[in-house]
Image (cartoon, rainbow, N blue to C red; front, side):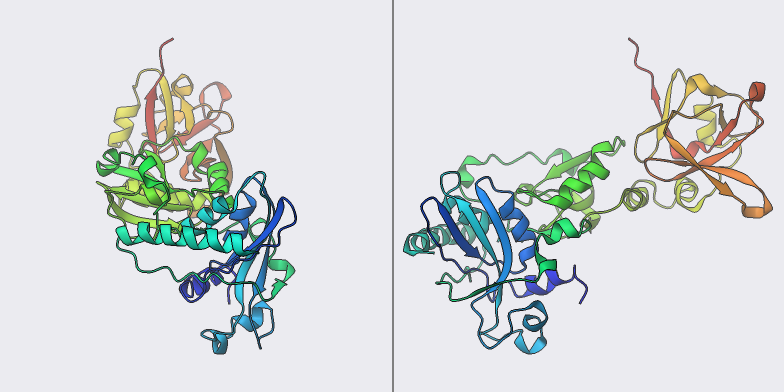
Length: 396
């Protein structure tokens, strides 16, 4: 079984066994055992809570089955009521975080009598909220812990060891204290094209990695908006909202297509290219190394613009400045240099020629070629106008 597919397997089993709690109280240090299907994302979520000292993945309350991953996922044990459950052992300081706060996190993500009473109370309260929105009954079991075994080392801190993927939030979007939450206005998302990123309400390493590597640097003309699973009202979505991050491409409030999990910048911009450019000459240039027709419509528009900057049509990153533009009479936009650090070069020996290709650093789309026949011994960057957008320079 592929490691990341493990999430899907245990999500399917979510309603067969989801929660086991017990506390080992020693003054202000307590331990509680919580199971919500797969333990990878849950472990990381608990560790991110202020006051949680440690979270460890393991197997609990099983009999007659070896407490290891290979055994518990065997087909014969899929519906075995004595099979072990994947749980997280959460050790916390109750001076900084309460049992209620941890269990609210547990229920919204969907070892003693005091903890059991609190768990039962919160379960009943959350059931009322779910029922109001048409969900069925909670299947979470609350029972004393009979046994617990640490999972194999490769399961511990799994998300740190596997930096690409998604966090299975399993969220219904129904939250406690809903009367205190003002719904966000999604009116603008129902007009035109938008990029919607479904973010986690809690810490999600893949969400943070996506922001760091991709979305924080995005400056494109299609607006990008972040929402959590409880903020999607009024939108017509096809993708489930439990995997974070998810990137959805919307048109007039309806999902055109989406992608679940972390995505590399190059792949993100290819999806964006499909969404923004469609079956056009610009898409062919950007992703199939095509070439604009000489003196194309965009060239005619861009050859005499006022002062400003030409940016990547997808990422919005600055590529060329009008101060470096010149008329080459070649039929393509020509520049003596790019914006520093905005492009990179590759050898191109296609069509029996030896040329140097120019690509965008931010989106990795094809831009054109560079030749050594520019004015006064300078280079000539021969660039396709269809993959550019123009931004006039702001006057100071």
